[in-house]
Image 1 (tube, rainbow, N blue to C red):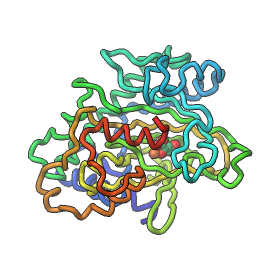
Image 2: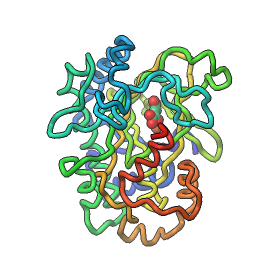
Image 3: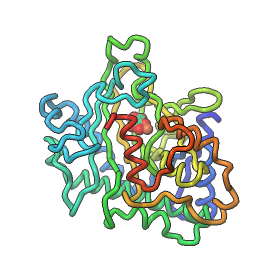
Length: 337
Ligand SMILES: O=C(O)CCC(=O)C(=O)O
Ligand SMILES: [Fe+2]
């Protein structure tokens, strides 16, 4: 696979053919670009969110530290600020933690966002609008996947990701990679975010023109993913989507959760934003029904085996039951929770 194999798919007129394109990309690369229609996720909101993120990460460290990840003040588990080297996405490959900062925001509960530090606290409308529009795009993609998988209940995925029905592991994350890496970590300074796969169903990834560095692991080695592969570049760059471990597991390995990382490409500072879409906590991860899954059978067992290895699970352990339990396994590996 080369970079150019990751397709840019226009989903503005959903059809069986479009659904098949999404499934083909999700089951081969695990990564696809979605043409930005300029409506579902407003390009102005993307710009405004990046500007807000820059302002936030430039705020005093003590102010950010008050909302430390998992702390009650930040709203609990997996919410809040991750300090420089506060997280290692690939604990075996990075001695000192990733040279990045992050801030995790969960979905609003009863229309109220978790407690937020300045300047995020002054832009709650923008943040929740952005979260909602990301979720709308994820729901459209999940509906296309339902169609392509010939699931008898067309709303199988979308109803299980309906955030009005209960809590989920969904997280919107802003990321900041400062200019230079830690001097202590000489051998590994080329890696900004360690090799990992994402946890949930789908991830939407937003990057800024000129801020490359994302790479996918393939049998032929690491390959770079351009910020905007369209030529000439589009007014609104396409949105990068990837499949997470949970959806890989849920589809018995048919959809691929591809390992990726971020490396230095020049060493300048870099900002990105990720929307990690998860099903509702109590969704049972029984293999997705439908003709396509039936025909696929157990051909995904190798893919699932790789996922189990990443989770440090030995063979024969009790299988996972709910989306929440799946997430908890991943959080345990990343944060030791
Ligand atoms: O910053 C990026 O481009 C990718 C970040 C990422 O893969 C993640 O946070 O899961
Ligand atoms: Fe990721």
